[in-house]
Length: 152
Image (cartoon, rainbow, N blue to C red; front, top):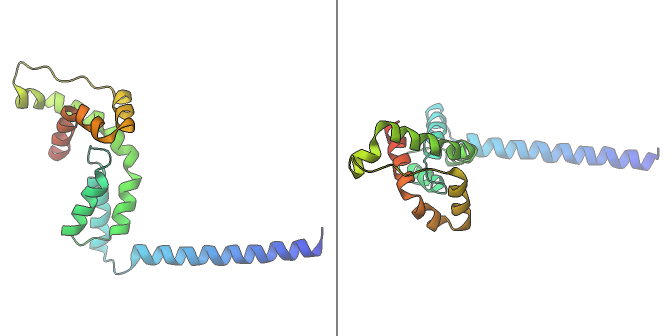
C-alpha cells in the first residue's frame, strides 16, 4: 500500500461523512420543521388516503388540493403519496371488483346492463401510450373504482 493512497482514502471518507451528515440534517429539517404531532399524523393519513385515489397521475393533484385546504406538511404528504403508488395501482382492480360485488354498475346504468371486463395489462399499456386516451378508454372502470374508494 502507498501512504498517499491511504491518506487520500481517509480524506475521501471524511468528506463523505460530512456530506452524509449535512444531508441528514437538511432532510430532517425539511420534514420536521414546525410540525406538530397532529400535523404529522394528518400528513401521513392524507398522503395514504389521497395517494390511493384510483386514477393514476391524479394523486399528486389530489394531495395538492388537500394541502390547499388543510394545514399539513406537504413534503411528508407527497413522499407518502409517492410511496403508496405501487399499492394504488394494485388497488384499482380491487376497487373495481368491490363495486361490481356491490352492484354499483347496475345501479348507475340500469339493472340489465353488464359490467365492463377488466384487463390490467391492457389498461397499463393504454395509459403508458397516451394518458388521457387511456383514462377515457377505461372511464367506466375508473368511475366504479372511484365510487368504491369514496365508500371505503
